[in-house]
Image (cartoon, rainbow, N blue to C red):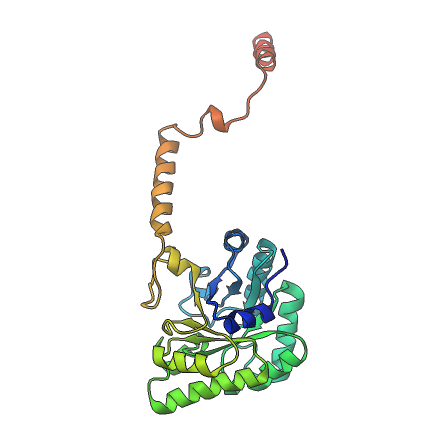
Amino acid sequence: MPRVTTDQIRQMKARGERIPMLTAYDYASARILDTAGVPMLLVGDSLGMVMLGHDSTLPVTLDDIIHHTKSVVRGSEHALVIADMPFGTFQISPEETMRQAVRIMKEAGPQAVKLEGGVRSAASVRLLTEAGIPVMGHVGMTPQSVNVFGGFKVQGKTEQAARALLADVAALEEAGAFAVVLELVPAELAKLATERATIPTIGIGAGPDCDGEVQVLHDILGLFPDFTPRHTKRYAELGKLMSEAVTTYMSEVRERAFPTKEQSAHLDAAVIKALRRERKETA
């Protein structure tokens, strides 16, 4: 089955079909999500927290993104894979953004990149899309600007801020972005942005009326014990299941209940007999 394309994502909005999207950071997870039929996989810079243990996305490097994106691309056959552009790779100039994006596309092999910012990033988005690199935008609460916002806070709550967000979405659409993430914005504002935009909106903490939804895989599966965002929902408690499984494993090892003959390879009885006889003869 061929990979999902950006045009197919746009068509999903046109049909009124909701678009599920999840993060993925490794081969094994990518295989599971791809087999399940998730149409878009994001190699998010959230890997800095859930995979690398940082307290924000800021320390994530281009090499980190490339490394993890390679694994996700290898683990998927159907999903559209999108690689986040980490902090420092697109803020300098459109030309520098192009250089960094080209490296991601050539070395890691995703089908698109994602970068934060609306009006301020429009020139870079335009340059990339004109060069044939599909771009997903990201506005609202942009994690790489967490220090400016003073934390992970809802954005667009005043009339001025709401107008600025709508202008950001319009600028990204005009620049050629195929979709835009709306993070931590009031549901009513996200609905308005979705109605006005011809490109799909992908919400996270933005209410039920976006064209699609993205969540961090570790959050919905209960794999990240340090923090549970209000905007997520636990669909499983795999962290608890893993802990229970590991506890049982340790107990069976200590009690010599594992491994058993079923998990072992065996010699032919004649070989064992010959080896024992040889030992007796040399004793």
